[in-house]
Image (cartoon, rainbow, N blue to C red; front, side, top):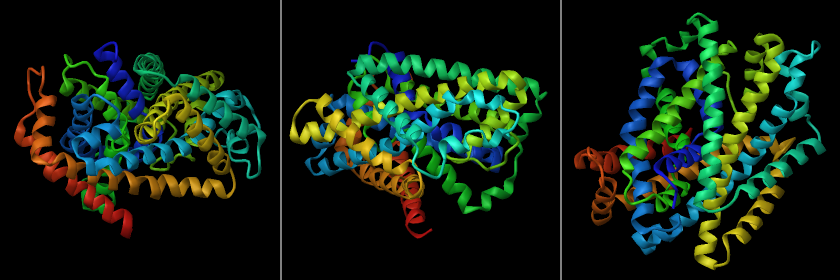
Length: 422
């Protein structure tokens, strides 16, 4: 059990908040303006939050890991448990590579003081050398060692996540406030409203996709965390708090991103040049801020990684037995081996393919299967009952049914078609 409601919220936020909040969301926000923020918030609470609540409720209803919960809801749903574990393994494999990039960015942040290198190119020769790099391999090994050392029960994960999230939030929000004050409010130009973007199908796809990916849905993490949530705590309040924290970090990252003067140029790779450009404007202090920023991103990556590792082990412990620690060690070593291929050269192209095509497809497909399972009348009624337990303002049945039975599957189906044909 988590020691408190706050610990559960911080652990769920630690799993949900990651590189997408600080790299992808800001780029989309600066590209589309406030229209994107408006649509994202609507989709977040109409589609994302009900699914989040359902996953947490399923975990608390059956009280064990994700695979066990899916099997208890319907024996035919055991493959869904495997798919969620597979999603977690794939995500954590390429996420660990990105974590190693973040570690190197923090370690070599002092190079931002170099008068000979443009700020946008400070990390390029270190992170993307174009050849085998012992430094990159060491960073990946260090990353997995840190993840495995953090691995443990709910109380341990909760304590580490709470510290990580609070530390990262202080750094990100602190620098975001500084950027707003220093610019005299001009930095908030990304809030411009452009109604023309509503006619773009890409705009809607980007907004819908970001909602599902930013909450760590369909990877089994929230189901497992729900099993550790005390029966006395209200799921609705916890779920809304997680969604709001996730949104707040995304907006804080957007302010910093826009401070670099970039418009829609962010990606998991280019952001290692975008943010240093913003920090370089601080002069001598820029190096220290750069270090603190990437350190905060790193602790968020760490919190997400051990959540994915926990989820990835669950199918194997459920199906084959054995200890969580043994499976976690085996999967960590396998992920480390695969990740060493993704570090450079053609591996980076494979990393882009995994991030842009493979993971989105698998998560969306798992989401469709999950909504079909959740929409079965007996389970849907049980989930709603669990969600509304100990809540002063219960979630309306009609809204829950519309979201779970119409909005969520329709959105996921559209995303799946787009992923297949475009």
